[in-house]
Length: 454
Image (cartoon, rainbow, N blue to C red; front, side, top):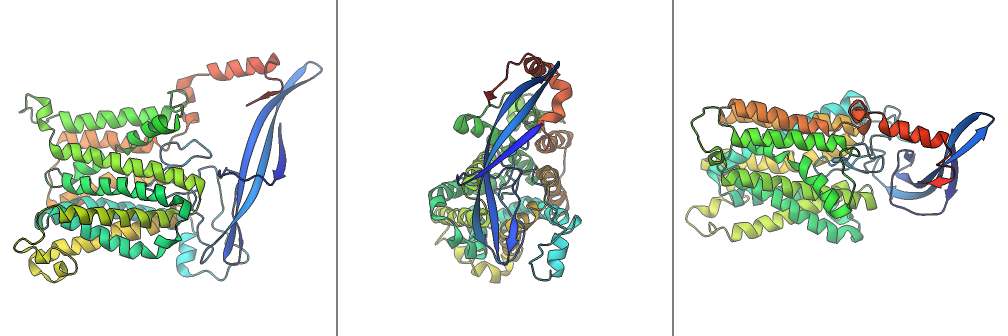
């Protein structure tokens, strides 16, 4: 049996699964709820039963929005089975899995929906949009390699980040002031991700850079242990261990296996570009982790945090460009904006800069913010896991890249690692056994947990 005791007046920063938004004109109210539970065992005749009592405390926080769109709180990445946790999908935060909102029913007080709103409130709408976002992200890697062929990496990346920061600038000053220090630090790690990604594409295939970038499934759990002191034991987080093992095996096959058999030293295939691609995962993974902490404190700040991230990235890339040595050199006049747009010899690279800055960076964050809030994070994890596949497809189409057996097998393991993050601890019951459940039932029957608080 489950008893619920409600109280009001205590503020906290969690958004548990019982929370749901209520709309009034252009303002929505976020019920903020904290809870404690304890188990009480009682006996009636020869029958023993246990009642779990949950004391729930709620408050309401108002936030004004332009229209009753999707409510974005968290972005769950490394802990899908944590009802109050987050699963990072590139730094955009959504409600946890357990919140099940019927988005097909518009708020009664809302005005008539546009065609786009009806599309986004349908079942297929947000899923198609998130799939489209994955396609866009996949185009980043081959286009990055094409930009590096015509432009210095610092010029291409700084121009891309400048365009993205301009596009997202309306959200920049909507950031909560108390998040500013964390957002600036987060932007530094985001810049690390973009800079190392650009440098790795100089001499490493786009498909491999994309697959190695998926090593964020390792980075985020490691930070959870080191910073949050979270219990990541295999019995508590089996899906994380599965993802880590699959990822490590995939990276090992990509890096160490030579299908031609011509290389005696297996480590000879590892170059500086591979190291930079792994460092890319460290940069982005750390930014996801910091975003998680910020979103836990102040929900609804996905786009302002993103705006700060790309603005800081643009600033640091500008410093990189100034120190890269090409400014002032002969022919460098066309490497900056807007001059590159009018130089015929680098027209393709300039169009790639426009696309990656405005579409795959700025527009994609807006798409994710609207789409992720309208589906289960497990579904989102599966859809977003297709990004390396699209990167490989675009690399084959645009650059005529050739793939070996190590790319197919290693890439399959890494995509499987991304899919594993969508699993729940309950999905591993057949492996973990019934020992824990039997012990708990034995304690309940013996009355050992009577009056015990958890």
